[in-house]
Amino acid sequence: MAGPDGIEVGRRRTRLRPPMWLVAIVAAVALLAAVIGKLQAELAIAAAMLLVAVGDLLVARWGFAEVRSRLTFDGVAVVGEPASAVLEVHGARSRIWARVGWWQPAWFTVVPDTPGLFSVVPTHRGLLRWVDVDLVARGPLGLWQVGRRDRHHLPVALPVGPRPIPHEVEPIELFPRPFGETVLTRGADDIVRGVREYRPGDQPKLVHWPATAHRGELLVRETETLGTIRVRIALDVRDDLFGAEAAVARAAWFALDCLARGWEVELVTCERPPRPSTPLPPSTSAFALPPSCSLLDEPRSVRVGYAA
Image (cartoon, helix red, strand yellow):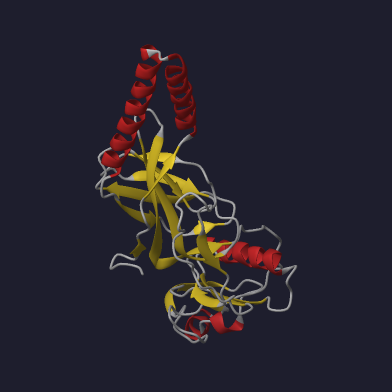
């Protein structure tokens, strides 16, 4: 069960690291030699190895203490591109080794009470709802590690958009609309800042009849455009499983291209219903399973400020 901060805290577990096996073998050989040959030196070596192993374990448990973490993603993410995130660790007495998500199963260190900036690379689009975070403290000799796996439920699902695919778009004539209006009305370009002579191609509605009658020649209005061009992109990929990703990627590029022109863009996607997902509790072993996250494709209708 997630706590008030949206974090499911896992069970703290202790694990041997590979160097510990070497120490154990050396200690066992020394102890065996001491028993067989009744040699005090080998017995002292075995005892020293045991004390070193116990001391390393105690230091690892002391360093882990009551560690707490906080994970924050910055903005939105795009498939195949690094997404910035910040991991903060509090309550630890030594540096913590951390691993976030399943994108890049690589460990990195975090200094307690200091935000750590790292990046992850999503592999497919959707909504990121929760992420598993592994936190580990190691002894000074690296013989033991004490760790825990926490599940962070994000306050707001992180959208992971497709990588835009550039393509050519057939140009069509679009007219500006007043901001916030859904229909084309007078008012988007009704502020006249002057008149000029008629040029071939000028629309008839721009003719300024009073000035034309006064000058005796055809004059048109020069207006101040206060509106914007609105573009709505509708994408139905419910039945096209193989071409869906390419179509969504092209739609994302077109939406970004329209936004770069200063247009108002709305992207509506219609996809298959999301797969039912029942998140499993954090692993009973903090090290038995690879870290995971929840990333589901969902139908959505969003006002585009990003490629979705």
